[in-house]
Length: 167
Image 1 (cartoon, rainbow, N blue to C red):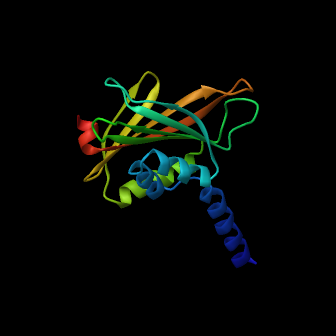
Image 2 (cartoon, helix red, strand yellow):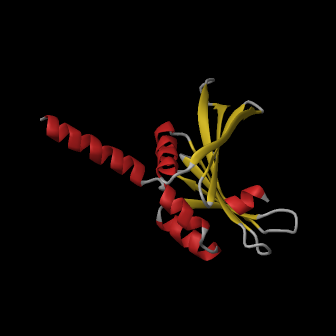
């Protein structure tokens, strides 16, 4: 019985997380072009929200939502793909509401040799910066009011190359 319960928990957690993107997938998306990003995310049931063209002053942006509510602008996760036609820079930002998913990302970063580079508070958000040999991961922990009058935590992970982050 104990073995069946353990298998049930394993499959349940795998199923819950399998609908989100792994850190490997996020890193892979960062290297894709616009069409490949759109095809990949829509195949994984992400909904396209908006696009902005790049300019000389700012990066272009594609925004997607996962499990977006039909009636309002809430979703389980949001993803932004930032890109430049001029410099070749691309970044990925993902906003999640689940602490266990964030911890899975952080554990993977650490397993790959990423170290905590800096941490601080800015405008009420906790900022943590992890740095590996080629990538920098900036994590924001913030709160927002929910529809029931309480607050909920929001986690945002932005993935940069070290060159892009330092520039």
